[in-house]
Picture 1 (cartoon, rainbow, N blue to C red):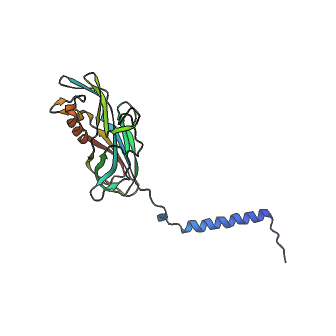
Picture 2 (cartoon, rainbow, N blue to C red):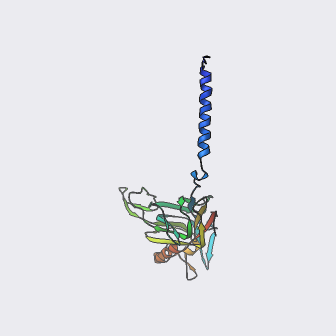
Picture 3 (tube, rainbow, N blue to C red):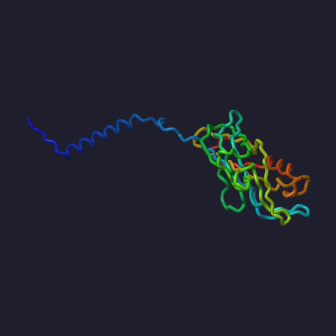
Length: 239
């Protein structure tokens, strides 16, 4: 009879060998379906159309656009079948032609895939509990208390006079895509950039609207609710 004495080194080698065999057995049982492909990702960005900061001349009037701020909520990715609905959340969007970036990134998330037709969201006045207290979107009394709020503001220059157009407009915005886009459930990317068509915000009947004139308020608000458009970037598009 031979007595085999295992040293600590021998025991360690055996343990490593056993672990290696166990890993081989586990890997042999794995199926490629055990690893799911990443879901299709959606992201939403806002920006202003080009030539911001340049003179927009119509007849004898000149307007220079600087930027805009507005609050959105209840975002939906419109679909032929069931819309993709994102969690309610007041978002302060700030767009300017002077930020030299890629627009204002609202955020993104996973989507189920489908046939998408556009974006919709509420243009709204911020809830008091959201913490959105941009100084241009609120009015304070002498004690510093907020006594009024706005849903959007636009700033610029009209005929050499600065303007800060403020509105309490509360409405549902709908921006359709130029054509439907079909995205897969997995391994896709859909990025929608919504551009403010700012020239059209200030035009009616072929004339420029003076934002400092209260009589033009309703027309500018109506234009702001209509004139945005979408450009898309996709990966994995099916149509």
